[in-house]
Length: 464
Image 1 (spheres, helix red, strand yellow):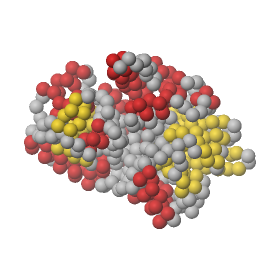
Image 2 (cartoon, one colour):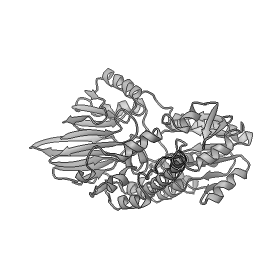
Image 3 (cartoon, helix red, strand yellow):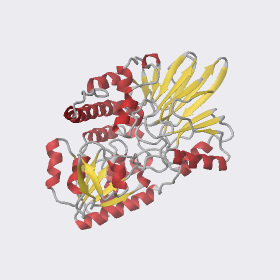
Image 4 (cartoon, one colour):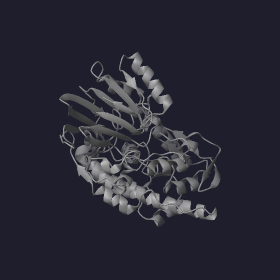
């Protein structure tokens, strides 16, 4: 069995791992690389393997850095099934079309600039039609139900506790009369996250392919993060300001809504308008409410005790039209506006930041990892002036950063995750981590006697 690390190798985004076994090819994830725009386009457009040669894709979850290049894969000849959990299939329907819409809109914007410089027009990475075609390849499989994508390989999904439907992927392989097992973590969730059950730990596997995004730091506890969140909300409400939260449409938005619901229900703050201004987040929240059996027991208790759904309460508004979104500019605070994208690189949140970032009464809440060179990172770093739509704005609003709301495991839980196979695993491969994070985590693994460990480079091939 051979693994080729085609993405998320010594970086965080673009998850893509090619497995060759028994004369067949499987692809674990097919995500978009996210970073500098020019580099993004080239990396995402070109595959280092023939998509038509891939027999099946096994998808860990719906986030775009794991699923977002599937339309391009299909566009370039892939014709097999894309296996995923039922919520991932449902979320994929809206997320890939939303991603395609962004690809098309970005290309229109870029081509205006290219035309002004006398350069030829570019094509979008993929279109909405390409996304719809990719969605037709999705095939739902429930947690822990075994399936065989190619001869000699049995696969099961296990709850990864990261977002709705997220999964770790276990492959049990029979090849040349030998039995081997591989566990791909996908994105590892956290203990005690709102809404979702805790991640299932790996067990009894030969090889572990795991993420290490936060391998160099621990998060605040979820309770501590909630307290910090509460503090910034209460403070901004007293100032009469607006709280602008760039948030990933799937996962983070729903957790924030849940926390705000708790604050209002516990009478920590008076009811105030909370606007979810992202078509994708609105659609995703409806999907969340459609899968109550995927929630954790705490959420069921909250629903029972408070007599209303965990993702719906008085004062919560799901913004539909562009006109409704624009009307928020004229409304006075206090209020909360949650809008995509999570790294403030696209979408309606850019307009809210543009209109509110220069008012010292307002707050911008950053509550997730921000890639280098993104607007979210510049705000997180509290740069004095930031560019939005090509114009410079003074950053006068208060900036609060709460890593404890991250849906990724921190260093301590990553150690526990890897420790679950200590003494059994033949090798651990670290992916989805920048060099500093991976280096710190490797040192911790060595200290704990867990390993051996490898940190593969892009396109490295490993025989196991």
